Image 1 (tube, rainbow, N blue to C red):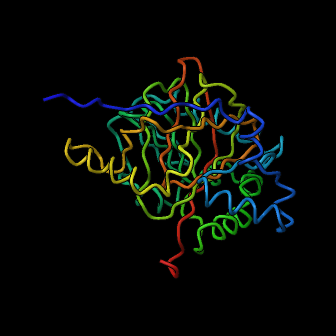
Image 2: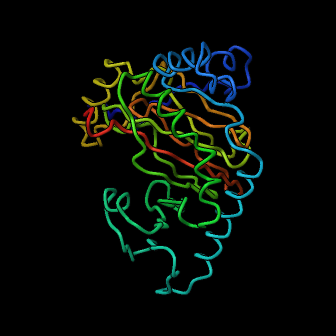
Amino acid sequence: MEVPPLYQVPKLHSGLRQRWETQVVTFDLKALQRRRARFLGAAMTLWRTGIIVIRGAASRQAVDALATMAERTWQDVSTLIPGQELPHVILNRGDKRAVRGYNALVKSVKPVVNFRHGEDDGMMDVFHPENLVPEQRQLILGCLHEDLVGDLAGKAFGRKLEVSCRNLYVNKGVQNTRFYHCDGKGVKIKSFVYVNDVESLDIGPYCYVKSSHHDRWLRRRNQDFNERHGFNKHEYRLLKGCSALPVFCRAGDMVVSAQHGAHRGYPQEASAARTVLVNVYQPSQSSR
C-alpha cells in the first residue's frame, strides 16, 4: 500500500506586494475609524477571505516600546541561572512549568513568560504583556484598537466578540514551526501587530489560506486523513492545489485573521527575528 505524503504544501502567493492583493485585503486605520463604507468593506472582506491588514495601526512610539520590552524580557530570562525566577513574572521554560495548560495561562494574574517546545521550539510567548511594564500599559492597549477590531470582526461574523487573551510572540531563528492548521471550527479571531518589518520569507511571515474558513470540503478531507493516520484533527496536511498568502507588513501594521481557517507562521532563517503583539477575540459568554 502506498504511504501518503506527510504534507501536501500549498502554492505561495508573492505576498502583499502585488497591487491586486493590496487592494483586496488592505485597509487604512483612519478610514476604518470613520465606521463608514470602508469599515463595512473591511468587515465583508474579513468574512469572505478570512484575513485583512490594517496599515499603520501602531505608532512609532508604541512599536519602539514593544520592541524594547520584548528584547529586555528575552535578555532578562536568558541571563537567569537554572531555578532562578523573576519577581514580576511567572516563568515557564525547560522542564519547569509553573503554569500548565492554556486555560491556566489565560487566567493567570501575573504575566507568564512561556517558552514553547517541540514545534515552534525556542519561541517566547508572553501571556498578558500589557502587565509587564505598568507605565507602558496604556500605550500597548492603545495600539490594539480593541473596540474597532472587535466591532469589525463582530460585524463580519455576526457574533458579539470580546478579548479573551493578549500575547507577545518573539521568534528568533525558529525553524521548526507548526504546519498549516486551524484553531477549531468555532469563530475565533486574532489580531497581530507587527513590531518589526517582515518583508521576506526568511523572517517568517504569517501565512493564510484565503477563504479556507468557509471551505468545509477542505476541512473534511483533512480531518478524514488525520483520523486515518492518527494526526491532530485540526491540521491541514493536504493543501495541494491551494494557495497560501504570506503577509508581508511594515512595523506597526496589523493583521486580522479568522483562526478557524488554515494558517501558520512560516519557518525562519537562523539569524531572523520577528515580534508580534497578539489579541485573541472569541464570542462573548452571552452569545455562545
